[in-house]
Image (cartoon, rainbow, N blue to C red):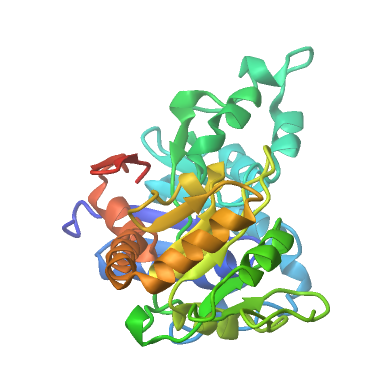
Length: 367
């Protein structure tokens, strides 16, 4: 975009606990947009800790004026939203403050990026729902200028149940900053398989599957919290490590294994999946909705039925021992990973182009 038509963007990033989103993704998005000619202001207690070269520690004490949304409220009291085309935030309470400010231009939009899937939705409904109305009626939605961007298209029914109007709902993939999550080496140069994470991981199926692997299959390094357990020749429990070490281990693996339990109202596995794809690592994963929102079987991943240790072992063996398959899925992972980056997000905002589904040889994908 030229400077005359470049969007004017405001990012309101309140106090929060997610290190990827607040300390990495949002400040990196701001910097990337500026490089594309956009005018960007970011209001965030985390901004002083952003380092484009390395991922900082997430546990930083914030000053009292930033507790909750107090810092955002104070900033909005002193500034006009009339200067912006797009306001991006991560919470409904901040969106409420922005709408209440009353100085948003008619063509401007406020976007709530719902990376954490319905977080704060109950509070939003309680605040906006008219007396006597039901959430599913959709009468609580406060403004056509408010857009909800979800990272989980497969869970659209949940948003419908909450009464989110479909015309106010858009889809935005979970995005990471490549400077903090760089690509790894050629997968064929790596000598272990990676697995890890802490939410709804099906470690029992992983244990059973790893015990079935033949001696020639590379070992699996598992990075998960809790007491280290005795594994087997193919499963080495590495325990809990820092985020930087976690990513380095994933990025230097042959591929990533994600054994998952499915919960109908909550996605899981997507953070590690996005990290793996950005690093160019193929995936072996349980075939659940959240995973299908991101990868396609035989394109970037091999998907197996939930709780099926034999199928998981077969998929691990196949990907580890079939060199051509490993190369093909790694290439697919690298391509998809580029669409899960802050650079791709910034390109879409700067060009003002809608984010549309993509037709592939394996069918339509969400982005």
